[in-house]
Length: 513
Image 1 (cartoon, rainbow, N blue to C red):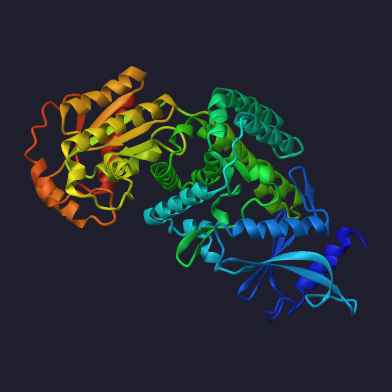
Image 2 (spheres, rainbow, N blue to C red):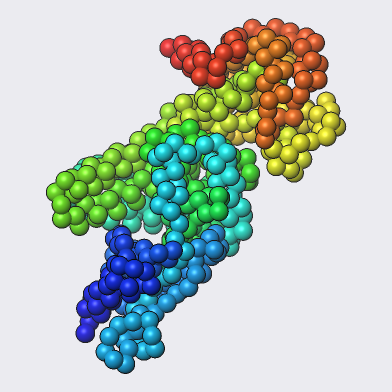
């Protein structure tokens, strides 16, 4: 009996009522690499007996090895979900079961979570709020920090192999236009050439690690109230060992492509606020494109396997949309610098967060906030309060120096930037404009103004925010001599966040015309 016949019998056994200790037959979900059975409070995952250019599950021995790898690797991020690897055995009475016998196939056993707790479901019902996105970014950053590092001198060559693999996988996809596939391949190689030295340097300095490898919304769930990464890429350690920003790019791409652009922007910025990965942002357009290309050829395979005409058509359209997205990610607009100033409580950070995904290429502008930089320099979480001495003039000058240095680096890497600070001194405002002039990028300064009562009400109502300003700080700032605000657009910030954001976008759009 060959491997396919062996697995057909296993599938029949697992589909039979009561086989998985639950009344009635288990609910079945088919993917391109696995068959998943949902039974009671457990999930049983059977690897398909398939072989693709990028994976080989064709024998029971290979399936056992990959099941054991999946258990071990996913326990890095979801130890409560991943329980065991169990064998399906040929028993003495000639039937298949879990009793003593000769193993014929293998299952991963997991705890089951509610379908509504999958992050793609949470996002679809509007539950992907800012607090959840920040927590998710923090957990990904912590996972990457702990992941095993690989020092590789050929970071660019490794990315080149993925690009070549994507093109090879697209070659047999009837629903993907060959001309568009060729265009993407050529543009990807050109983009790779532009960042090759950067990728080699990152590979040699510890930014390549054994990551998740398949980090998108359908592989993250809420478990005990926290976003939890699961179902990592387990079948090829070399594919999963990659630049951490390439790992993050899958989730950023998924969010952006599905229309959750504000969330993608927040995730991107929070991750960079918590890590030392900002030096790799020049490679992000290529990474996003490569992730979309993977979705395109995987979707094309799924379309070819569909037996229902309407579902096949939907899969073909989806694959084509991902191919279009892969091309679009490589066509990023030039960088620009937007500075948002104003006294505490004027809503600078609220506005910056609402503008970031509108400015620059995906996933939006790098948002640099003085309050967050101050906490990072102090070695504390953004939401942790600092003592008064952290706001002494010398410390503030250090923060603004960091702000300018990071803004300059981001712009030089081709990334648009929003800087968010009080900017009460004319010299600070001039310095921001000078950075843009030095790098020959457009600049806009937005100065926010609101009545004193509104400022005090806002700072008093803050919770879990990076700013430590209170009513006393507002009173002190109201005595500042702001000097000449020439060159900055003065915006009324007394309305709702939506109204202020619309005024700002109108102002920025007018500056573009």
